[in-house]
Image (cartoon, rainbow, N blue to C red):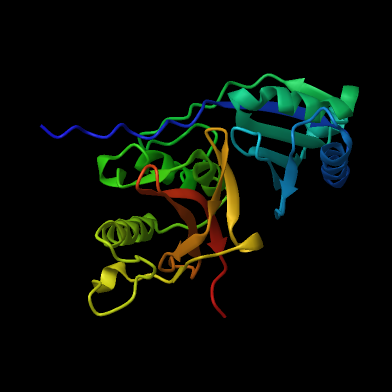
Length: 268
């Protein structure tokens, strides 16, 4: 009887903290950026480029990205309390000490409000406090037997929470292309591209191999840094946006490790 492979590790629980402040959103963002650069007691962290009201704090020693949403309070309550800004922080439970060190720089300028812990259901249901998106799809896919031929890391799930790509069936197609490339590699081929007449049309996706330098994203997994030196792009969603999947080969597991995802803007 063939032994079933063990499923990938489940993402760690999420924690949520919410604060009210009289500071402007720009001042809060600036204070956090200064904090990540100047405090020696913090682990190595950096703020990723972000747009709108959200920013993400990442680092090789974190268990997942820290998502910070900064929103302007409006209405009579804000006028009465004087707290014009709402700050919501989502993080992995294992990173709560880092979050505490980040918010310590604000002192009494931040007033914490009690909020329930967000549920993090991995079976494809709606997660309280979040909208279903790429991150939730990857968390669900990581537990499916059909995805056992590659490993979806927590860093990819965390990155997917910030993506706006909407056609999940195209992600599934790209994953099947990785399965095909794995079989080619295991049979002695190079598996370096999804092009050619011998590959079914639905498995042909733009790929890049052998990336180096800044093009090869590095992520932390089980205490080790992993270089993701290849990418595969999905087909576009209805708005023209594509999802780029960053991955690398594990010679130990004989699997592709999917470690990061990122949105690509519609082509001009």
